[in-house]
Image (cartoon, rainbow, N blue to C red; front, side, top):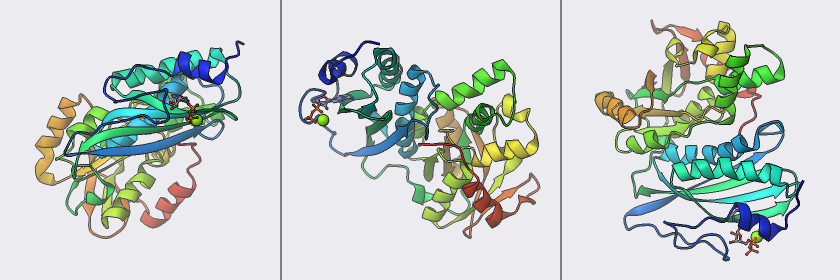
Length: 327
Ligand code: ADP
Ligand code: MG
């Protein structure tokens, strides 16, 4: 293991020439300029070893995920990523960790033209804290509070694979090697739905990203909007790997899984064509999964509208029985 000093480490792995920021790494502050009429969207997420990720995760994937969870928050607001800062606690300046970590992190950053502009580095138990900055037209951000009675409810991608992978790691179920590779990737290398979030600005009435599971995160939207919702459980999009599991586990992963980093959003029923257009623009699959209702409850129903899981109790059950580590 090669040991590096703090400043050498920053210079070698985390100093990038900036193109959009006015000033990047190397001074006391970075400087970002926001165009007139635009607001800065700011979000932080911290990943702690043992709590949010297992020590066996490949460092390259960890770098990817640390930024992905932050970009997912920007996506949920409809913001365009601009820049991020990186605060790292490292047990040692180990290049065998730092080189692939920086590679995974900066590859995702490059894909979204999101520049690393600063941070902090210290010795300590492995902890990665990122603050991401994005821009959004003032007043246009997608918020949790905008869902209205009668709106359609949608989700991007599929739900539940990250939780399924966690169950395999815990040893509660077994799947084939190929299936594990696929679902493990969903857990370790989530795709932030940045293009979809941006395409939904002006179309969606509310949005949130799924980090703690559909039931819990949709619950935040319903509370903030003062509404309820009916979710058609059989309509929830899932991978073939999850669909191969028994129904109880499928529901647990779909409703309470967490770590999905898909977007849940609402849109007025007369905006269906616009939602389909946004999904196409973003090349991201989107599924209509239910409807916003009056009242404060989240109901889970079948295609005929019959409740398949009791509302309040199961909702609490999902909240409390969700042991998946998440940022
Ligand atoms: P200060 O003492 O002013 O906080 P530091 O010595 O901590 O500055 O950091 C020096 C420069 O390196 C600063 O510009 C800081 O933003 C940047 N920096 C420190 N750690 C990181 C990191 N992990 N990633 C990116 N930039 C970093
Ligand atoms: Mg510092």
